[in-house]
Image (cartoon, rainbow, N blue to C red; front, side, top):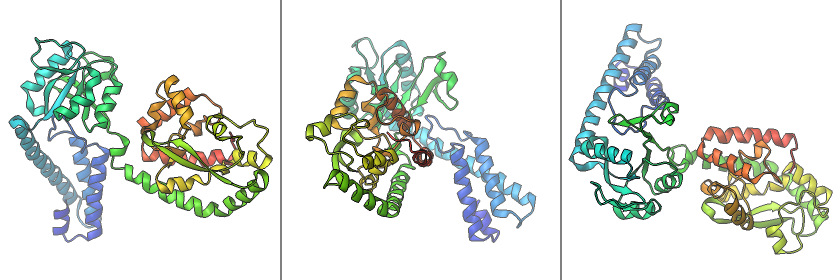
Length: 411
């Protein structure tokens, strides 16, 4: 498309716009989504659509409708041809031993049958090295390399690059394998209802195969989260500097010296960080500071302190934590080590909150889960945010946080 437009003497901005639109439309249509066995005709309608959109952008008001249509058809034809050559080379390389070393979780009948097909058809790009199973069956055609809980050791020691889960209830295995850099697939048994709920799925010889989404940190949009954090934190510090100075003077008059204080919190991947806040109460000692759950109804908090907490102005210094990289604007709220240990033992999924950098605001907070509220609900909301993270979600949470501040939600 770019060559055709350039040959027709089109301006550089039009050519650039056409190229950008091709990438954007194909991205929306998941044309670039990796496939176990890619086909040149995969997402064919989206390919044709991107060609048409690009042709309209490149030749609009500069050529006849026939030229636009011909350019779109030519683009689609060339794209399909190029993909055909590329995918043929890929399948040929896989048949010659370039398939990814894979591990099959569970040596059940379904797992054995799937492994047999993967061995017989290497063009799918997954070469089973063995199973992980609780029982070591010597009659199997592939070795049992360990138990399910040995997944990290087996992946690292055997150079595994893909994990195929055929059993049930293997969430921890899937997350562990993904964290180690493996592609993770769920292979539901034929007829399982989960297949009816998934619109975009793959297959191995008609065995359904669902690809696990990559971690948020490995997505193209992840660096934009950090860029957004820096811009918002810098803007926040500059705009609120006078307010912060007034708050510090008022609270100094109410509680004495030391308007700011640092407190240990548990951050990303369990790392300890120091969170900065405006002091609204002076605890009796370090033990009380680390273990006192809530001061919402503590009589030692004065009117200034209560106002700061009600308006969340006591958290303004945390913009500095964001700039340093220890926090994000949006993420699970940080908690003290004492309570993290306690809740991790008693609340399902609580420890999983630390898969994402902690934040000043979050999905749980905009739904009213702050202060003395259900920890189980908070963990569920935080994990939902992490599992479904997008940059658009962060922007939505920021806007809703502004609305909540204007309503003086308090805590």
